[in-house]
Amino acid sequence: MARTRCNDHVVGAILASWRYDISGISPEMRKDYEQHFADCAHCRSRLKFHRSLDVSLAVLTSLAVIFFLFALAVLKHIKPLEHMAFNVLGLDIVSMYQMLVSAAIAGVCFSFIAFLLVLTATPVPTYLSGIAAERAKSIEEHLPAAIRSLRSR
Ligand SMILES: [Zn+2]
Image: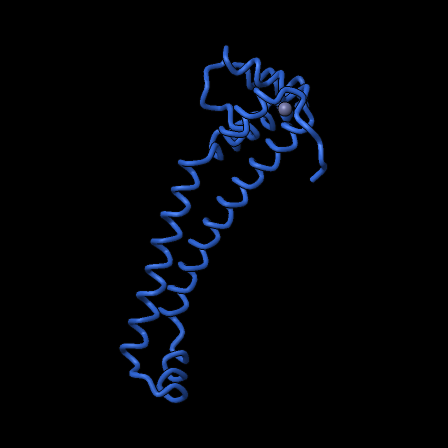
């Protein structure tokens, strides 16, 4: 990350304490902070970094949910695992299976809770819906006039 300095340390400190998230404040109050983001390259880069961190956390936790669900599906359908556990490790088939299933269920629960925490503690939903609205608007602007007139009805 480039070593830049904030051009207004008071506003920069306030924004840093909010993790550069101004989505929770009223639109009138937001104007000054948006102006600061437009003026200050340091805060703009920090904003970008924090939002990409939030999005990667959401992606990682949702992937963890998917992988644990996949592990449960594998445990349900693949029987050779039971034979390997029984022959090589000398474990009881039923207890080994139950241990793996419990671990997978605990993994699903834990990663789903982590995913919900990421969605509630970070501005990811508003950030992503803002990006989606922006994309929809730009796509609509590029539509041919005939299709655009159909949409406005
Ligand atoms: Zn700044």
